[in-house]
Length: 292
View 1 (cartoon, rainbow, N blue to C red):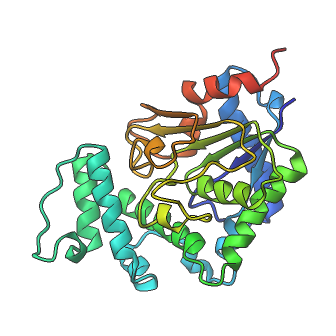
View 2 (cartoon, rainbow, N blue to C red):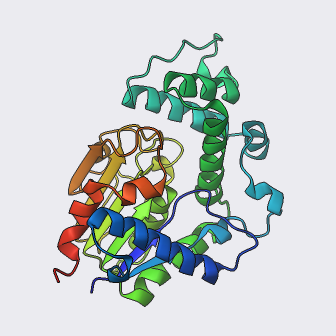
């Protein structure tokens, strides 16, 4: 039976729960979601959840684990305004949004982040408060990983994922959101790890400035490289996913075997569960599962 490793995205830190309990609970949850899409039972899906979020929050006050305030985010990471602004512009291009023109002569960088996110949520008919909370959570976790100055946090998260793949002997890696970045770097850092399938869901790997340009190994001539031990790489993005941009993904990662964009959950963007239950994920995983 093909062992699978699940790599989570942003916002999964639980300060009061031991990591081993989180791994047990979330492994079962991912198996249940995948089973629903595949039309089987969770018992037939050997999924191990690779939990790395605690590394991103090590030595930080518990209160900082709540990321629902863009003002606090910018105070903690002053340079993030540019990254969020570039994300907004990439999102506008990807979803063909007509964002209002910048309100200042200096352009969008001078527009307060709250106002910019409000433009996005209004254009997409999303709840403004929830969108703001999600964007703050996303950029905070991404910055804690990719913006780690001494590299210890980044290395610990990456080694956590690599260790899970090695210890389980997994041949399939399913990575969602920021997890796709961690898995990508972990597999590059450990070329001895061989997997038959890397499935990235809602991935921000191609997002310029905030993610793509900070990857290790660094892109060459605007192109990211497939991890050496990956036999097949499939990327799936929901058409309305505000993180999985810009598109097409294959433009930045031409070595990806299949770059799919589908309508997964129009009113439930970016969460892992709708992706895992989708027909696109089921058809991608089916060849790697037992037939009986």
